[in-house]
Amino acid sequence: MSIESEFKRLRDSEASQRSSIDLALVIRRSRRRRIGAQVAVGGATTLAVAGIGVASVAGLHGWGPSSTSAGSAAAPTVASDSSGESQKRAPAEKLNLCGAELAQVAANPDGLVATADFPTASASAASISGTVTLTNTGTERVVGTTAASPAITLSKGGVTLWHSNGPMIAMAAMVDLAPGASMTYHASFTPVTCGTEDDLGDSFRSDLPHVAPGEYQISAAIDLSRQGVDGGFASNDLVTGPVATVRLN
View 1 (cartoon, rainbow, N blue to C red):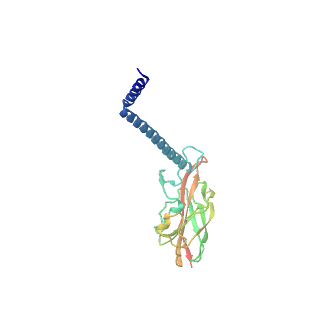
View 2: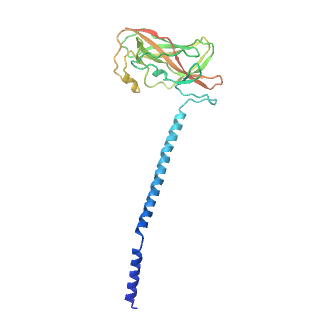
View 3: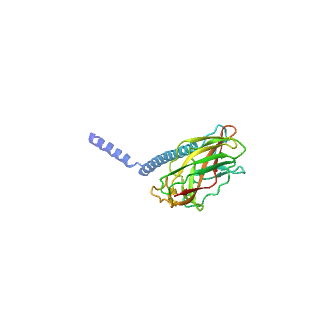
């Protein structure tokens, strides 16, 4: 056989082998590889999202009050009623909302009373200062912490006209009151009328209309983180008091 004939035979044989490749099999294998890659990517994404969720929940738990004794921690907006059952409630500054009737609040179980005292002032004043006295009218010593200043509500005819709002001072006041003892806070309010939309933001609008001269009602409320007998966090109680009258000229 000549060299040319042998070369032609080898070339035809190689072409025949290439044409016999199962194209359908190649396509199926390619598809399986792509599907496997997609599943792997999807699984990694799911784990990443789950990881973010776990981190967020852990972060929220970290915001709660700490305690030195197991099982004594409670959420900041939880109060205990006379039956010992926990009930969710709004914080002191959200107790009375703009345009709503004054909330009806049960007396503090420890006998604490917050009494507001504000002098006669101008109805057009930018801010009016006064005091709030926290008194222990109960029979047991009360130890704990409160905010640096109580929340104040200005009202008329049982309807809220204005209440404390905006950023709060990041300080705590220590409370240690024996039966009959009291302590005094500085407080203030703005003699204006707010609307329901003001409670939707972080703070009230700056151009709220001033109230007209006349007699109005003032009340105070403050959250108390009460210390238990073992030194740990016992509960978060709401302290309020009687409605006082203020004259605005």
